[in-house]
Length: 76
Image (tube, rainbow, N blue to C red; front, side, top):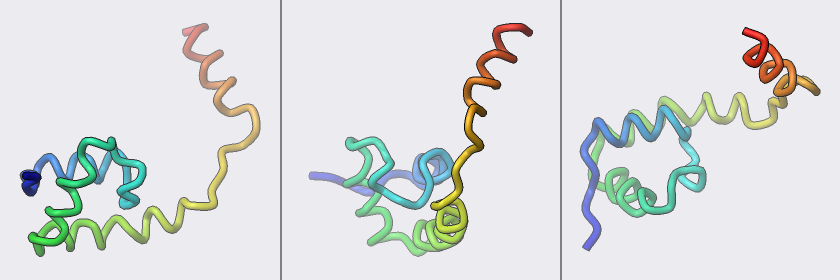
């Protein structure tokens, strides 16, 4: 039986993966869904993150940015 997760874990996952549960690790999604169903605090946190996800949904990093970051790390 799947149970709700504690709020600290829920918030950490929300901050890490955003409001789209499809991006969360597979083994946490069922618990997250139950947490959202049963916790007003979780729903409020989720609602706060959803607009941020929406704002960045179509944002793409400039071409070559990853390569520049890697090169900078390697030369530091």
